[in-house]
Image (cartoon, rainbow, N blue to C red; front, top):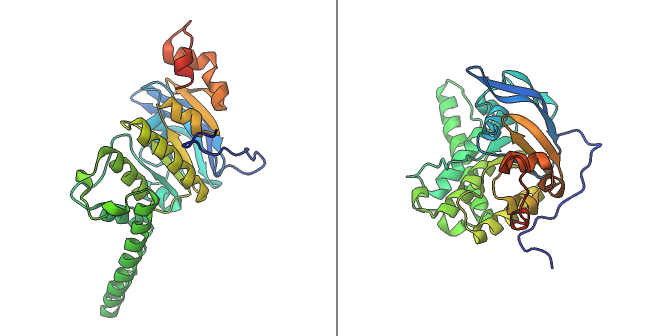
Length: 282
């Protein structure tokens, strides 16, 4: 019987140009290399999970892709365009959105308002300096606001929070806040969605529901790219898994291949260790 929360995996289409291409990316902080010559690609609608021990450079990598921290060297290409030197808002407007390891919601604002904020990055209002221009801006703003509100309500329904629209974000349960962050990121209408430990702190039922949600996101034509420590989720949804350790990419392949890779076992458990059967299937 098929796992209820499992995501239907697809065959990779290696003849298609990559959505995201990473070329020898290095990021140095004060002489310490957080990333060293990292190279790989992500195809459109491929679910890729990035795993590794704490301090492996995973979040630094996401920061480089989203413009929070520019690479010291190397190149990041999105849809064939280099984005390595762009500001975060410019990258977001090109179609890359993210969530964060630690929840970053606007606590006093409602769930609906939080999602609407995610949509503002794609909003463009007139900047005419005349009185007529100001009036036009006001009308355009109201129209845009209405459209954003409608879209935000749709996204809350998509992530299962339709009945929580008017609740302040800080009053939502932890798992609901995680889903709200995803809805807000989707509000930016991304093509590539970076999820930084989306299952952190979730119970098994919430994690199972999250796995289903990731599959539904992919079905919308959006490419999910995850950092995740929950190995059951990684093994259940990933088309491909990439492993970092001390800023290096040490392995890449299918979930089954990664699980049995001795380099991965050593990175997580130490030299000479073996993955216990329970852990391998978790």
